Length: 202
Image (cartoon, rainbow, N blue to C red; front, side, top):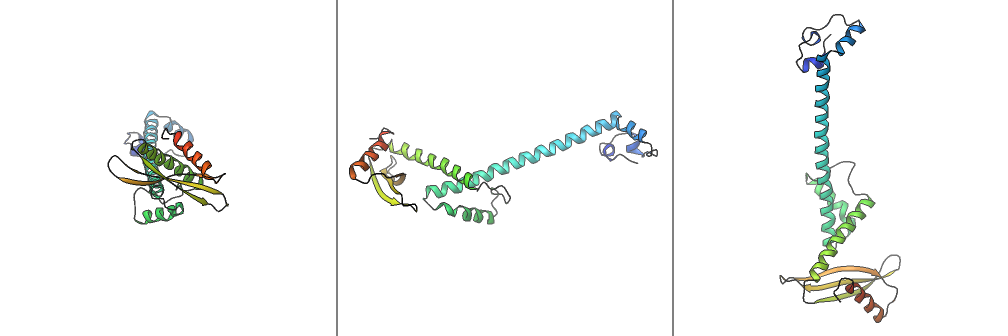
């Protein structure tokens, strides 16, 4: 009987070099497993396993992070271009088919409804803040509004802004959408003034 663990770590005991013949005696095996040689081999093996596990966790963590970043980039692209959010899955599939290293083919996709909503909100807030920052640095800007009705027959006010940046770039950006409770010009004007006053732009 040989001890493969001691052989692997090149120990010089009998179980590693020539094998033991009294393997039927439990006491002999128990005595051997308590030797410093064998205990040292066990420690080395445990350390090796722990290192392998840490390497796998580290690789998995990096891959997972890249996967999340990849999906957020797609969501950001859709939001920035005002494209339908239902295109997300199709674009993700396209990227995967192109063998992108950033998107994993696995169970964890971060594309469930809650994750999508949280990512979209975070990105929307970022884009909205970017627009407000640009508006605070221009001499003047224009406001365009449009009334829309969703599938629940609730009327909304769509608000767009048009402005020229300090770099001379003309931009028209969607700013926000708010539910309408009143439809006359005076009330809509008050709504608009209130929105821009909160940002010290009125």
